[in-house]
Structures are given as C-alpha cells and as structure tokens.
Image 1 (cartoon, rainbow, N blue to C red):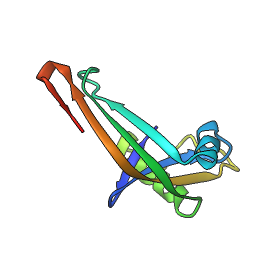
Image 2: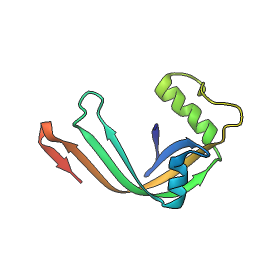
Image 3: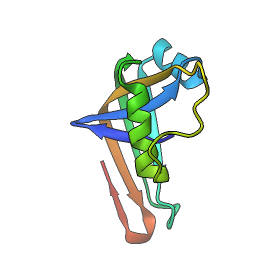
Length: 106
C-alpha cells in the first residue's frame, strides 16, 4: 500500500470494493506497518483511526503517488470504471523498532 501525508494525517489510496476499505468502514481502527527495505528488522508501526473516506480528489492523488513511486505522470494500471477512494487516518500511537541499533521507542 502506498501512503502519503497531509499535515498530521496519513493518506491511503485504494479502490472501492476492496476488503481493506470495507474493514475500515466497519471499524475505523487501523494499523500500518512499514519495514526498511535495507534492514527488515527496522520498522515503524502506526495505530490510528480513520477520520474520513472520500472519492473526491482520489484519482488525482493516485497520479501524484505514481509520480513519486513510479516516476510516471499517471497511474498506468487504472481500469475504466475504477472508483478510487482516499482514506485519511489520524495516528494515535507510533512505535519504532530497530534491534540492531538497540533502539525502540513510542
């Protein structure tokens, strides 16, 4: 899942009909985990709550993510009829872990 930041909110862009979206609508509590590609033991886990779900601006947001992650102007894997959805998440707890550096924090 590609993520983005908007102020103090985490943004997740997904498709209408995806299981994760249904789960977030049913229960707004979420957790995101990110591992360092170079060191899979180094990670950050964020727990938070969904504060908004909208399709407004979601397709343009996906194109901005494609520029960042793929170096392309538009997201080439979009299909006709896709309904993109933008989910805003307010972080409540952040946990950093890197056993090799002897660091762990909340």
